[in-house]
Amino acid sequence: MVDWTLGLTLTEQEQNMIHSAYALFPENGRSLNQVLSFVKDIPLICDFEIKREHSSIPPEFQLGVWMGASYLKRKLHGWDTKIPMLGVCVCGSTWLLYIS
Picture 1: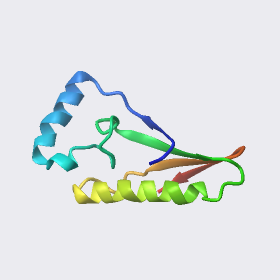
Picture 2: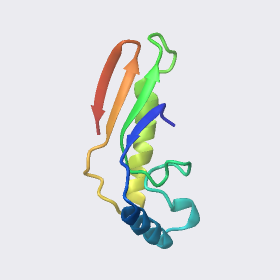
Picture 3: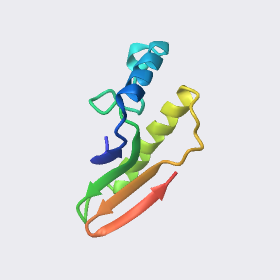
Picture 4: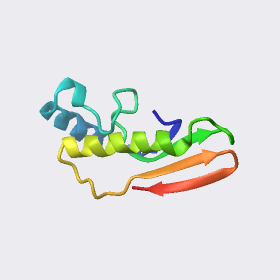
């Protein structure tokens, strides 16, 4: 999982539409993104992976795995995979934006 994410706030009507659509999916597929935690009903628009400057694991690696899972989730449900995904790696004082 990434360290931080930005998501959209939905209206009650939009939330109800999502929950109605969930009836078409199995229990473990009822999520707008690739997680089943408290953010499963929130459209995520930008993910952040944050590391210390000299981390043993590059932040791009973890962000890439996360964004790959998002792509597979979209593909699994037949959702549009051409909509860009945004990710930001923060390593020390360096911020890099990735679009996939």
